[in-house]
Image (cartoon, rainbow, N blue to C red; front, side, top):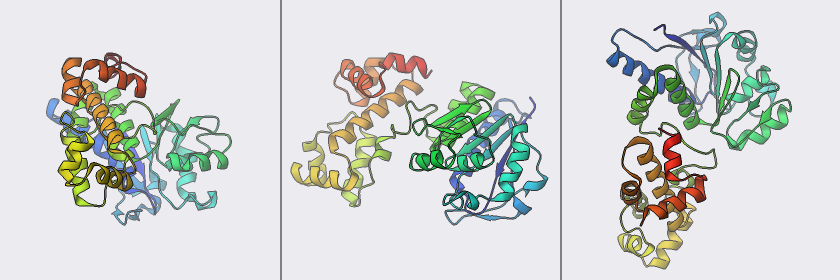
Length: 324
């Protein structure tokens, strides 16, 4: 097969995870193909910045560029990560990046923004008349600044023609996995997802974060240990009384402390964790629904079915059929 060229634009203030997340997926796909079809390469990956210089990432990490953006040809897949320098106004957009995007992005077969990279696409006129998404905290700002863009803050990622916009760091990984599945097949995408310990395909939108993402990480070590225990033992007795005993607190003290430090009640946290466990088992295993319910901590398969209908609007069987 002919490798698909992938180019990632770099600039000062870029969010390094918006770069490394999707590229980690594509590099994993290359490793998968090398193991299953020696001599084959799925993606030929490169990065480019204005002037070809190293850039200072938002997190303090310096990222080296493979070449000068001005000399880069339009790739098959163009990835534009997010950052911070252009969020206070359109004049903060890196003009060299925007100009290059205007000239070259329409020649690419896939144009992808990750998180606030949508602002750069919009500034270059690439989202005009299109539906797009960005990080939920910036969606209103994007819509106000670019009224010709139909901004939807709900989806994890949106495709409108050849333009793809992803909501955030994890959504960039989700989108890259979708490309791998389209290009190389489900087995390749599933292998990469399992290696990275992420879902191959998450249902719902940005509002459906994982239990661990919905809740804050507790400050006190004993409560952090309880959070980990819940994740590792969804089929255990996770009642308030049982968890309070593990924390050496009274049920009232435990409930008050857990809710205060995580922003979620123990019961809600447990419910989200069990639902996500069931979703993962339905996607990644062939266990029957009754076994999945038991392993996920539900008292019966019917209890699991009600949880799925209430949260996802699907039965477990319907969910599996859509994610297998």
